[in-house]
Length: 136
Image (cartoon, helix red, strand yellow):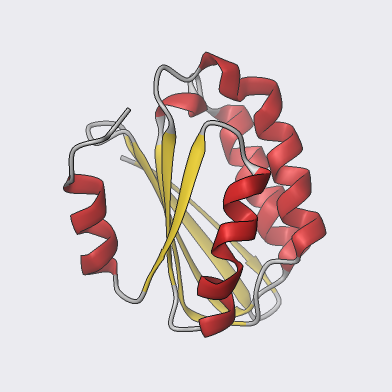
């Protein structure tokens, strides 16, 4: 496993790459800096050999706020350039107790081609979803 951590004032991002499970796990704390979050994620993907193989778990339970739509759209445009290489749709689990995050998930899901986004209240629920067979 490799790990990279960044801090932006009170906002902290830690991303761990689990090659065995083909999963990126990002844990954020503090008030979300939307631009910093997306910049960090794109930078991490650019350093990877095959980011289109990795499902993602993003844990926002220790955060306040949410990622701005225009920043999510920017990440979606980046993924459009590489997602065609994905052998299967990618799964994205977002863990948060913020109801706004869950309410926005259908809109976020529409932004990203060949990816599925789901919101969960706990990491345990998200892990259980990753363990279910894919319907693709």
